[in-house]
Amino acid sequence: MLFYIKFLKRQVQIKMKKRARLEIIRDILKVIQENRNSIKYTPLLRKANISTSKFNEYHSELISKGFVIETKSQSGEKRISLTSKGFNFLEKYKTIKEVNKKK
Image (cartoon, rainbow, N blue to C red; front, top):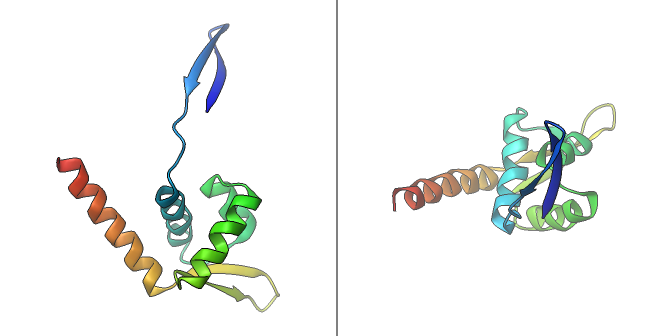
């Protein structure tokens, strides 16, 4: 993925690395966790930097695997929250990344 940025009146090319599937899942779960374990869908999409269509794919997988649950507030707003399995995933992901850094 290439992005062009104007820097001091010159165009600079920046190459962005695509996120891996597990990184996207981690980003989604991390955003939920950082928002007191309850967030509406639109802010989640923005903060996790993911499109609606891609999120729908991940959302159904995260629910079916038991990482997240969908709740409705008293005002009828849909919110998404982590389950204990989602918290465990984040902890294990962090541990694996730390071990991988030491190599």
